[in-house]
Amino acid sequence: MSDLYTLKPSQIVMYGTDTCPDCHRARTFFDSNQIEYKYIGVEKDQEATEFIRQVNNGLRSVPTIIFPDGSVLIEPGWEELAQKFQIS
Image (cartoon, rainbow, N blue to C red; front, side, top):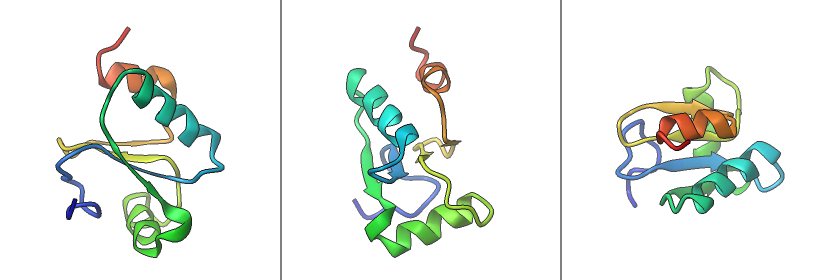
């Protein structure tokens, strides 16, 4: 996928870390609901780190989830993710 560092990716892209509980929750949500997404670990990807800092006004907030429609969720909870996908 060549459009990882953009606000209009061709699929859902989640930037996170392996040690982040919020990232784990978001990944569990996607997996539990069979929602395809691309996970990018920012610990080993300087370009990803710089991109999410641009998106988050200088902060390295994870998870940062970018959707094909241009919307962004930052550190969303289960309820916010369910609302985005209209899952009850």
